[in-house]
Length: 377
Image (tube, rainbow, N blue to C red; front, side, top):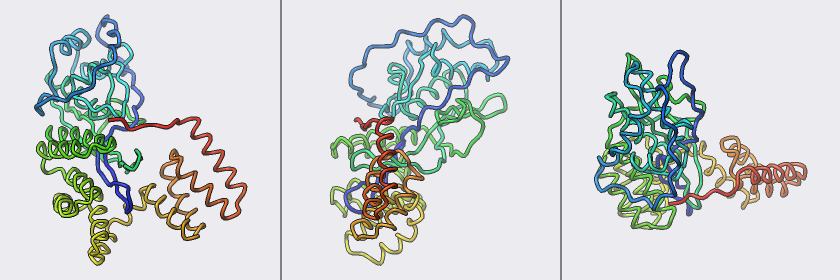
């Protein structure tokens, strides 16, 4: 899922749900055999046409006869429920099944996820929950409480959130998940069960954030409205909509969205941050200062906010302070080239030649390992 944060200036603050990196696939537990003689994996499909999402929310979880037949040929209905659940997840993830691969930009319905064999955590969760429910399991979507993580896509800064699926069977709970270092069927973790409507809202919200990144503000606005029609209680989506309206300069329309987000969730930091910025931009300094105290700790965990502070300090000649903030930013997120570029400049200004050489080498190493990535619509 996606989430984003808007420092003052031109960066936008949005909350969106994006998947995290694909985790390791756990082998079947001892004594749990897979379905006997499963058919070979299907031939990878040709590149699909541009995706058009379904007209109705409930169709996001619809399975067609081809999908049902695919799983029926690979899942043994004779074994116990836990074995069957493990087999379903194995069909989705393992090489002799769909061999699902992580795609941060892949935000699809269950059926489209099956056809593409890839997607983000929303896509995986849609396919997983649709299939396990078709086998009679009780399953819910979950919003996972993870430590905040941020990423940048052009001028858009996103705070990454995560969604997964919880299944109740055999007197136990299992989380079907793609978090790194987590088994695909993990024990209970810190999660909040949410409705299907909330999961649908995450889906449309992700698409809206992608449209913003592509420069399509009208398309984003329509998708935010679609998300809020699915779940008008989703505070982070009101925060995103308000943040986008604020970026467009429509402060009168942005403010009620942001204040509604805060009413729904007083701890919705994206809304609080954007509202503080809005008050600053409209000259309401006292109100801005009151909100700023609430969001300061949150902002200091955002590496891009720390970079912004460092840039301001660099411009004022406060190079040691800038180096301190860049040190913290890199400790939180060590794969952002811009942090190293600015730290090289800071080291040069301070006359720290060896430090500048060190950060230059780190930057070159980073660029060789992680080529430039794009946030595609």
